[in-house]
Image 1 (cartoon, rainbow, N blue to C red):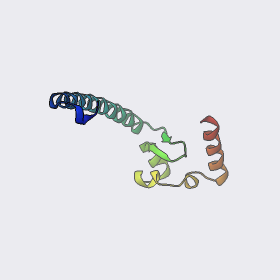
Image 2 (image 1 turned 30 degrees about the vertical axis):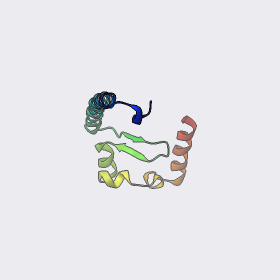
Image 3 (image 1 turned 60 degrees about the vertical axis):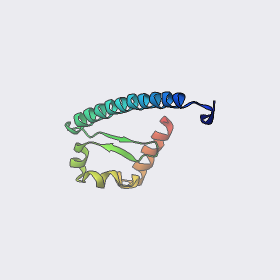
Image 4 (image 1 turned 90 degrees about the horizontal axis):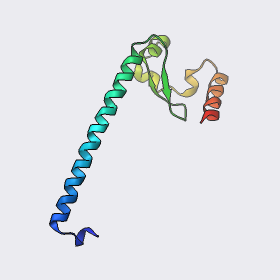
Length: 103
């Protein structure tokens, strides 16, 4: 039924349902954010270098050990080009090739 054909009561009921759905989504989102922070905090407190990339090999997360190891600030390291993160162009190509084979 089109909105123009619905009664005021029907529209109010739909709005109430949508608000409830939104509230549930907000609670779920906050739970995911809390879990993400927990794991990032865990990774930031380890001495091991940990990082996460997207399928294009852009770094989306890197822990504090990596910044300390390479001497970069957080924002600086996250914005490095792929070729700047490896000792040689061959290393960069090899890692990217492995990603492409895996995904």
